[in-house]
Length: 359
Image 1 (cartoon, rainbow, N blue to C red):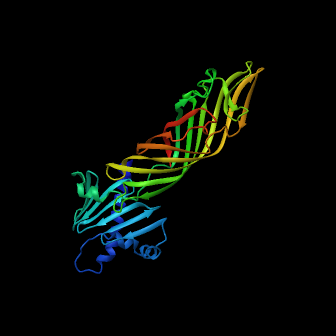
Image 2: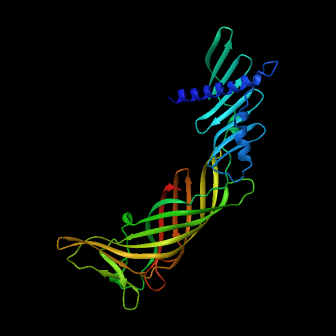
Image 3: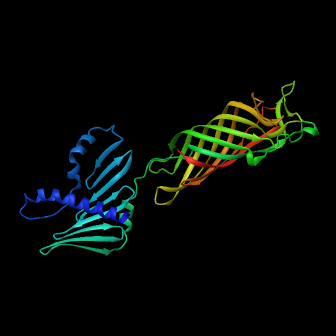
């Protein structure tokens, strides 16, 4: 079906252009065929060229090239030379048209369709040809866009703690913040991104900033929750022994702002790149709570306690990111502890995850 669609489109373009050529040749003593794609768009081009602010749909014309764009992307790109025209139609592929006195040649990838007009009628012959040469491939590449970083998106990761220090707690309270890491998930929604290119003529190095929301769930490995003692220090709290604990966790919500330096390495043409970035992510705590789900007397209960739990109001973390196309990984390591100084155990939070959806 795809080949039939391509052939129908190519033949339609050729015969549509022939209708224009018939009008042109009536005024000429010598019949010389030449396909002029610009003529079919001339009125629209004049209107759009006078309105520089039109970005949704536009026609651009140079000496030998015509482009039809929609939302800043090329829908059709046509190039005219002495032999005829070459065209790229969206993502369908490259098409070539060439005419002499009796033959119209339509090039579709490695196949060429010859439409031969003669005294006996019209014949169509299909033949194999050499693949598009390097110059044509280079010419038909997508235009190089401005620098575009990799921050915005929906991410999920696994949380943990490093550099743990419980030296200020008695022996029976050591390691009470141990986590069930498989269930300690972090979710990031990076909803805003702003890119700053650091190069004049290229788009492979730049700064990336923006804004996001970061939910961190810390699922306790022990059947405890946390709260403040009389002096305001975080302490582990035991549950009623009759409760059947299903889960107990601490959740924090931060508004985040990154500052990342990103390098992009082209690996195929110019649009497919490996990207590597590193920098700092700052966070402002805008919410936190503990949640306990348990069964008591045959009934299921869910208790939430909203408090600051001595969590850092402002925190900073180092972040590194690496990816290729839709596959992206990130790792974040805290430059500040989880709790305010002397108000809880010394714990450095970290997260390792991947990007599920890029915006």
